[in-house]
Picture 1 (cartoon, one colour):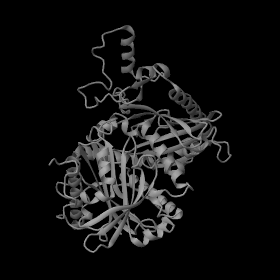
Picture 2 (cartoon, rainbow, N blue to C red):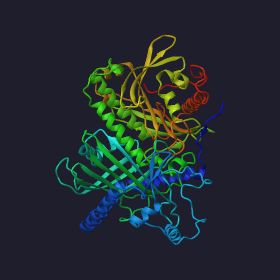
Picture 3 (cartoon, one colour):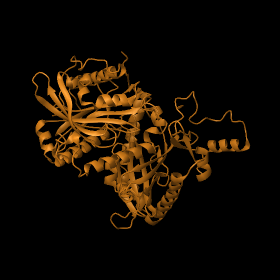
Picture 4 (cartoon, rainbow, N blue to C red):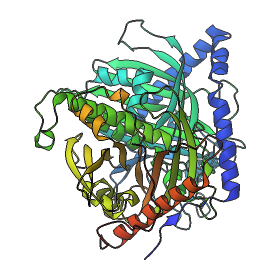
Length: 582
């Protein structure tokens, strides 16, 4: 049997990431400094930001509507990438090295020595992705690569409602929890002062963007967000960084004009054209995630659009008044809403907790040979949605040489838990009801029943949410006792149900890998309570037990997927017993 590759960053990488996290933490805490910079000489700064935002709006609109040669098509993946040279011609954004390339092309000089962007077979970034990194190492202290992408899709929501989702900070954070760790509205420089009308609204914001793993550093930016109605039923919402205008410590991340063009369609849907264009320093990325992140795929426009589409489908499910379908006839309308709202909180907590945000103070597990497993502590005192006291979150990432659809099918199947879950030994698990939350059959909220095989008694339930799109797949679950589950099914307030979210994120190991090829980057997280734990101390036996469980789960999952499911029908009992929070 082949053991999966575990993530083992070097000491140098760990130190670098630690420094990066400290810097980001310092920057995000200085939002008040940004406010001071914006408000001092207020009228001058307002004019500068307003001019920058107007230029960004014009650029984004051109990028959204442009065709060839500005945008090139990748026939194999049916996606688009921005032509770097044509972009420089159109918008005049150049570096010395790229200007020299243009000069050589124009005068017909030999191109044998020209760099081959995204097409060098000797490079680890040779996937010919539509998100091609551009070296800008000739600018010391500046971000070292540029990422650009465009995605187009149709969303089941009116344009004016989509605009509100993007312009209202609270709603924006709720719609994109798997991308945005934190956000803050620093100030509103202009608005119509009419609720719900965002035409001409200009905001100054800070935000932190993340990938679903502790091994990819977050990206933080200060930016202006500008909304403009271009025509009846057509809106543009654009972000542009302010770091070059206000001198703050470098975050090594710049958000060039990015955002979306929204067009109202006759059927109540909206056409969304999303453009992402950023400059970033990717040198701190763990080797396992380097190809995915450095290609631009990990933070691409496709990820933003697919998340928006899925969240709109989820909202439609939540607000639906249609009679329940056969998959959830046993669940009342009130119970359905309670389960959906709780699953939303569970999933939002999970994707936030497994990120590399400085709020998650990750450290290596203090077990010899287990440096690849990370641990952080969470403390809750008066939050009715979380158990009181200190809880422990453990996470690790592994590479598996099988497509993510195969792993997703295994992990989301309620009856297959006994094949990989160390906690399901001598138990029967099955999905007893589910609520479909999208067109894909894997997008659902499920109730998983856990029954003791010997006594035939129900021990616990899992609330589980699973979803997948072109950029990644997720399986998130939390144990819930029988009393709480019964109350939820009767429509009880889900805010008062204490849960801890555990689960998996599954990403392709290379850009645009199709469903039947390539490998996967699997991140698994386990969230537990431990009475003797504090922020500074974790009982050694707890550490050892959890390490055994995580290692066992990884081995079992890899054994099943690498052998096409040819394994025993239950997990190995040799590992130490440990209890989740019930």
